Image 1 (tube, rainbow, N blue to C red):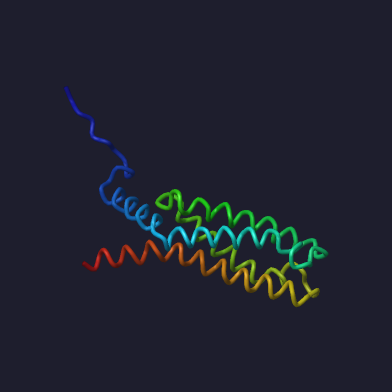
Image 2: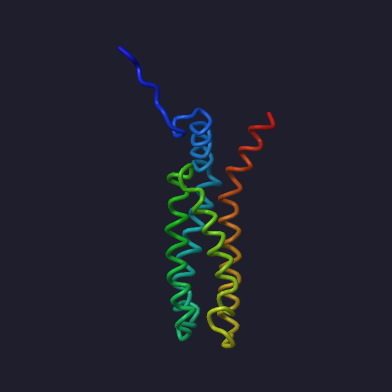
Length: 147
């Protein structure tokens, strides 16, 4: 009778420890709060053309709608399975950065104060929340290794 040891990196003790640590981090109040705020920010970006009143800019309206929904969906996966989805938070950093520059990149010369303010503030918040999501696990890992 022979016993088969699990093979592959997914069963390596260090990988299992990192996953366990990531799951602990996302079950904290800070992790859950970051996820909730990020989802709200993404949904606000999606509806902002109609709430703020710049839906006449078709390109920016579509950009905000699609990227707002994408951001909310990506960050929603953060809390439930961060150990396997933390790369999504990096994609959300890029979405937040694009949101900041979108009024100029998408609209070209047509600038309206409310489009700029809405996208710059919302994009900045989205970028900070995504960086916070990434940073929580890295901060916990450095604290653990310094012991």
